[in-house]
Image (cartoon, rainbow, N blue to C red; front, side, top):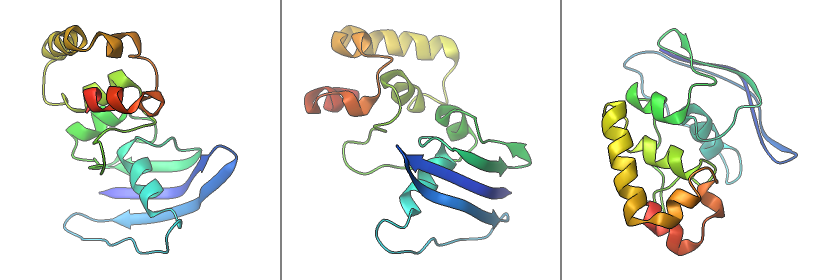
Length: 143
């Protein structure tokens, strides 16, 4: 069902995942254990599409998901629930909004996004910027 081969990811110049291999079959429960900083959260972020993969492949239900955007993975049930302000800091403002609307039609998403931007015009200005670059107040608006 889920297969990871040679998965690599980095933050800047620092590689934090070094060729991870993982296979999870339907009905299995898997626990990822490791010390602080070992890459557990980065692995989950890569699987859910909110952290860029720099090498390797992610296959889900027989399809290559390595470059599938996070909001599309959510529709397949491949997701992560973040802590804190409930935003993904390395995704854009628009990508964060789309994640919350994965069940809706494109027309509905466009309408809801227009409403959100009408309520919070600053988010419209920053729609293509990563959410991590927003001020604390702007991040709260996005959440």
